[in-house]
Amino acid sequence: MQAWLLKIHRWVALVFALPLLVVIGSGLVLSFEPWLVTRAIQPSSVTADKLESLLKQYDPAGQARGLVFRSYDRTLTIGAGRGAGGTVVDFDSGRPLAGPSTMANVLVTTRRLHETFLLDLGWLVVASTVAMLALATLGVLMGLPRFSNTLSGWHKGMAWCLLPLIVLSPLTGLFIATGVTFVPSQPAPAAQQGPPLRLAEAVRIVARSHDLSGLAWLRPQGGGLRVRVVEGGEFRIYAVTRGGTQPTPRNWPRLWHEGNFAGGWSSLMNIVTSMAMLGLLGTGVTIWTLAAIRRRARQAERAATA
Image (tube, rainbow, N blue to C red; front, top):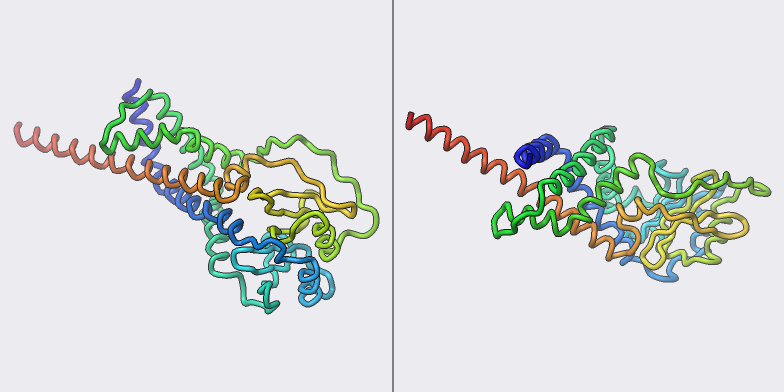
């Protein structure tokens, strides 16, 4: 049985080696994003007055529906909501920019690569995620390893020592892809009295109870306005109403998978996990390649002897 499990383990890894390399490699790059965001936050450096003045300058008609603030390059994007582009402004100088910074473009492109392979291949990402979980399960079913200072020993040592992280990373990714949040169903939001909140009004309301320097985005979501603010290293989402902000239930699969719950520490956790997964993929393929070379050499030797 163990021999069969080993064969299945190897073939699953070989079949999905390339997509796994892309998913894990892009995940490694994205693991740095929470650290980049949290370390660049300058408390009290973003005020409601400054945001309002930029909105009046670049959205005088009040048509914009969303804001995105990137602390690591100090830019504000005023646009129509999630993924709809918009006007990019240097927050400190107030000057318009041609587009997002190189760092922002790298992170956005890497996220698309991580989620769809840039080609609307989300199904392949999901299949690769399932393959990762299958590899971990097969490894556990093969039993406890004998640790040794060999390539195989390091492969098994990384897998067993970091097993919880190696399982939770693809598992939470699968939860995100399938819409599992573990958030209890909420009643439909009550209709707000009066006209819909404009962004400038929402900014003022958020500023009453939150430091806007931790602002990540403000946009329509779930039938109302939502704001994402970094507080104590955690990326929290609040509903914005005329009465103030209300915390929404935590989506733990997303917080864990993206490393958004403890600032630099959760970012480091994902970096270590991604590097371990790359190490497992690399050592696993190398072990198989060396075994194949030795097997062919033995076959050639037997043929020559015969």
